[in-house]
Length: 189
Image (cartoon, rainbow, N blue to C red; front, side, top):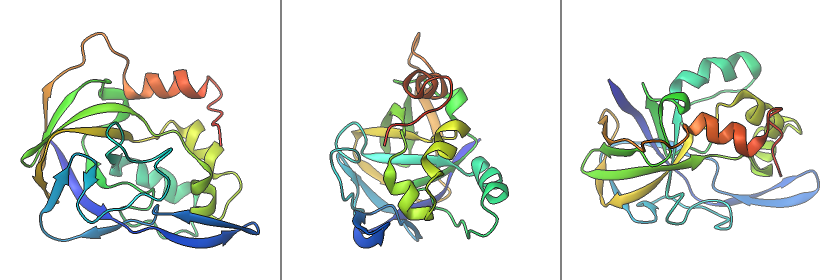
């Protein structure tokens, strides 16, 4: 059974990275209770740069908890609570290799469409204070996936994730990531 492990929200903040100001809402933290799902995202969550995050096709970002042990091994000095990769939903039992673009999901009383993998940006480098984080993330193909909200509602930690309809003939999220990032997993910044 696929389920939501945690619902994570964050606000935009600024900090210095390599002598440049960076504004991002990548720092998400788990919240308790039910959260409203709106067309453009979760109530109480922010995105700092709408050119690359948020909007109708990237309203909610989900990341599998199954990837966390890999990152704990790769980044042993980092504390990695749910939300560490900027995801709104830390999920379990559903991964990029088993989801197709266009798949429709029911979570709580809201419905979603799987739209694309997350392509890493420089905010990941800044968040982890590592010049190589974008490349590590891309090469790992542990991208997580964006969701469009097709029906507003509410959700919370523990909710089951149900596949309502598949995107027949469409690539998986993982195949789309390989196509967009190239065989070496080279990400654009």
